[in-house]
Amino acid sequence: MSTMSPKDCIAPVFESISPAEFFYRNQQMAGFGNTSQAVYSAVRELVENSLDSCEDAQRLPLIEVQIKSDLSDIIQITVMDNGTGLSDQHVPEAFAKVLYGSKYHQRQHRGTFGLGATMAILYGQITTDLPVIVHTRSFESKGSLYSLYIDVEKNQPIIKSCEESHREHEGTTVTITLRGDLKRVQDRVLEYLRLTTISSPHAKIYVEINDEIKEEIGRWSQVIPPPLIDSKPHPRAADMELLRRLVALQGNMRLQDFLIDSFQKVGLVTSERFLKFISFNPNVRVNTLTRDEIGRISTALRKFDGFEAPDSKSLSPIGKSELLNSIASIFNISTLHYAQRGPSEWQGNPFILEGVIASSDDFPKSDIPSLYRFANRVPLLYDSNEDTLTKIVKRINWNRYNLGSSSSVSLFVHLCSTRIPYKAAGKQSIGSVPEIEEEVLSLLRELGRLFSKSIKRRERAQRDIRKMREFSKNFRQLAQFSAQLADYHDVPQTTHLVKQLFEVDTDE
Image (tube, rainbow, N blue to C red; front, side, top):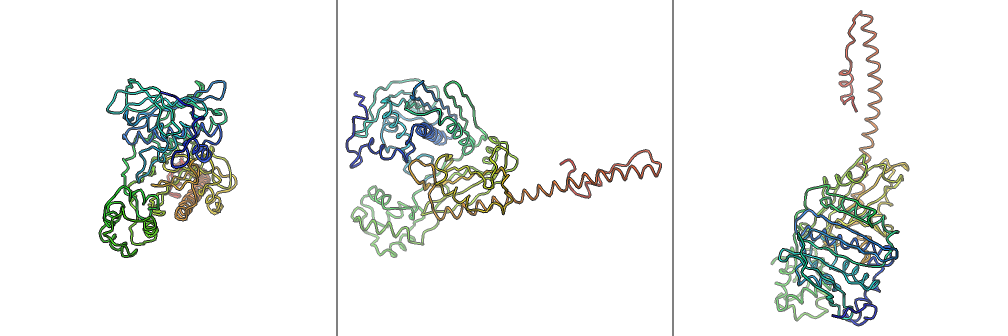
């Protein structure tokens, strides 16, 4: 089969543009705007898919990342996992079709609609004209090895080769070859992988770069997050596009039955109240609705205040013990405090916020804590100045919480939601959403109070220790003088008197 170069294939697809043109228009916001960030984005997208696959299989993730580069700028990135693997019939489209994916459901996940990994593959194909290599094994096969291109004219996979290739365990190995600047982004990739083991403490990651850097990171916890429950979309999350897709799926269903069947928190009574609110016939067939009528329903779903809060069972926060232990495993920590907010919602999307404030010599000294951002267990390393979390941190007067200019303090903030309001397809910064901002502000203030209390306790303990030493010294001298005056050879012990006086351990 022909292995055409994508550079020669610019033709209409997705109504008016080809995948290549789609990529060229969106490569900057998708994380492929320059040669260094492209390497980082490719590693990130493949690792995200691997983690999701392992958690779907309810296995402790074991992920290997290998990056090799020659004397030029050609870089080979290989990511191997022990996840579910893919069935043979799904491999070509999963890796060589833009906007093909299995993540069109309402639950927390790292990736977005199968776009990220395919963008990395397309970037590699455009810059090197080399295929993506996929070696995978699912429960129903012994293993298959594919070499694939993307036909950018038809948005279809081109199978250069396919053969049976034994793989000892289930899982997938993906190799992408692209042009990039490894030297500039190497430290950022390592930072991303280390931080990934904070947000996914049950994962173990092996990384090898050019046979020079070899590092094993993670497995700070043996607890696999419980399987996430897929949920129907909440009616307040039903924008025009979602509603049109649901209508297309339901065909000849009555409008009232459609509302009950398509959305969570909508039963017979709630649907009757909503249809009365919007003055629609409950018996009208959804496939007869006009575009304007669908628009009216979409607007009303977001405005109607009779719906219950969305279900948060589809969310997976990291958890207090796991988050504290993973941070302490990466950094040399002196103090740690955890807080959580939620579940709350924004536009029908449930979300939970959790955060940690920590002090360590590993952190830079500043009057504002440094910030580590996470969204759905993914570290966010770029575009921090544009992120609403960063802006809120800067709004707070941290002096109120005993943070001075010489403080070495960092904040770790994790947002998990069925939908993260990213500012761009690159998924590096969180946009402004009033409901999220309000909860973030409350979370940071709570962390500030916890930190301030711990500082005061520490200062009080230090004062008590100094006083105890003085009292211990004075008591020993008093006991010695008293024994001499009484002509008593054994000097009485005074330690218990100091303990009783301060009611603390003198060994602190």
